[in-house]
Length: 273
Image (cartoon, rainbow, N blue to C red; front, side, top):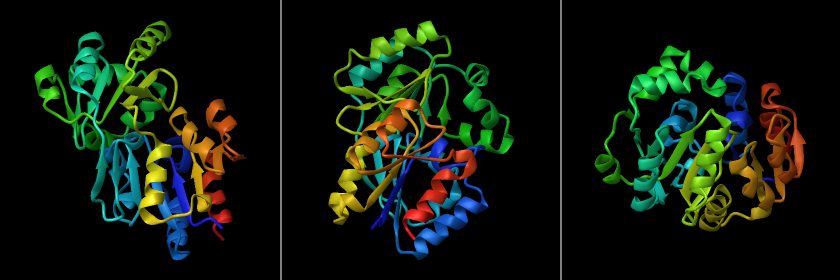
């Protein structure tokens, strides 16, 4: 019997517009009525999760930033794991399109104008950045033109980087591999997503199972990206939507229809009936 649902957001649970619409929310309401636990497992920042107010206002566990931050159902922080200062300093000195993410802020060395110009070229962000309300909310978490000394004063939980030039991207990917203390688990191509190597979505979900006395065989895990692979490989009830990366689909035990067809939320209702 499936009693715990753990799901990624973008490309998995969310619709084609990266949102929770009325249909998905009504299905999650049904899940709660069935007395099932729901765990958000995402690479998003906490600010990014809370842009989906339904998730903030309901009693769901949240594993954010690929496991660097865990919140209980009352939205209390129960775990944080930061990146070392030496790694932060070195990356800052070598690359520019980098986000240094704390619990509540994102620090960047570039200006707001540079950020919008560059990230606006990324197909994944074009639709999001064209939404004025979302853009205003999204930018509220940023500190642009942040000097290194300010960033080093923060507990940096995750480092994101975007490089649209494939040759330069490979250079960036190769460079960060030298850090044995970090793991790079990007959700898609042309980005890096660095966290402390002692954490992962899998390990944090296992931690919640141990903390709450959940049977791991009663967990169903859903994901679509590279940062979901360890979770999809470990849990025997694992699912990837048709739109997922090939590596994620290979790791999952079952493929469901695309997120654009509500494949994940429909499967959740099916297996918890």
